[in-house]
Each structure stands twice: as C-alpha cells, then as structure tokens.
Length: 123
Image (cartoon, rainbow, N blue to C red; front, side, top):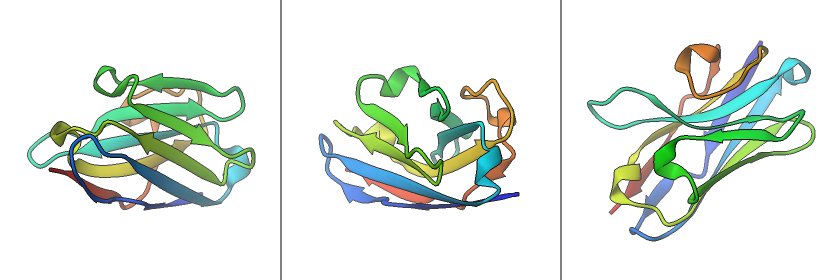
C-alpha cells in the first residue's frame, strides 16, 4: 500500500510558474509508475504527465508538452511537476498517482493509488 500527499499548489498569474510535489510513503520500493493528473470543474480527470522512475521514461499530455516537466528523486519518495508558462486553462485540482504495474502512461485506470490533490488556479 502507498500513501501520497501533494503540495505546492496555489494561485498564480498567467505566464507564471509553480512546482508541485508529491511525497510517497508506504511500500515505495514497489512503485513502478508515478503520474500527475488534473481535474477542472465539470470535466473528467485527465493525465498530465507520467514517469517510470527506474528508467526515467516520461510521457506528457499534448497541452502541457514543452511547459511542464515531471521528475522524481532516486528513492521514489517524491515526484515533482514543474509547471512553467501557466495558462488559465491549466486551472484545476492536480492529483498525484502511483502504481506497482507497468506500462505507465496517462490512463486513469493504470493507477491504483491517489493523493487528495492540490488546487492550482491561474488567472
């Protein structure tokens, strides 16, 4: 079992930057994939970025390519999402996710463990 706690959300003007963090605890040695998802009011939760920490392989959703960067520390204890050039369309609640299975990717059903989310508001 894995517990995930997000932090780093907040309010920022368009064009600004934020860095989200997700602290993992529990059976972190079994984690194969970690990802960030987001959900705006009235919309489905969508994948933003994923990483396979063992290989460093990453995937990004098209709307964030070139602006967001996902990374993790070597111990798989923390995953980060660096968000630059933020746009109003990036406003959403951002969720960290993890799973013990591969492949990784941006499908919601690929992840069994979820955090409570952190709000990002871009104005």
